[in-house]
Length: 202
Image (cartoon, rainbow, N blue to C red; front, side, top):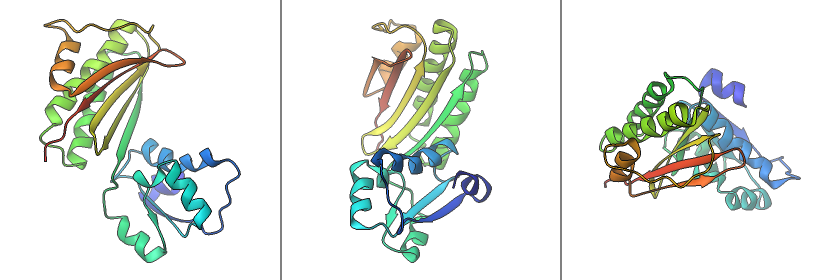
């Protein structure tokens, strides 16, 4: 599936005969799309699920990012519609070039998702959060961006120690706080995650 997405850019998956022993396994569908750059570069639609599988998919919110269609003809139509939730991620090394790569990813995503009104703020947030990881925490990190009905969430996971962050005027996190509807830092198994939510107009 991942190879086909990489080579072709879109895939229809007939799951009519699929039986899932471990429900979280269905997360492979959105994970594959996100890992290959997300919509519209990677488009995946599943179809033909029986009632039990459909219930599992919906319980794990898979249709939010990977549409679920009743049949193949409907699935083909859904390939051309942006799902309710789209996401991308990028693993970044502990290098000074990482903030620039983060800016490029966010700029491209905003263009693909038609988010012109928030693009500049999103680029600032991503750049500052990645710079905080590679310059101050001195660790590699993962940048994840997600658009859903709440807005655009930009999150950076790094291996730095979990501490409460206090944005001060003139510092990067102060700008993040200024342009975001909400932001916070949360502990993770390997370090911390700093995230910001940007509102989307209209």
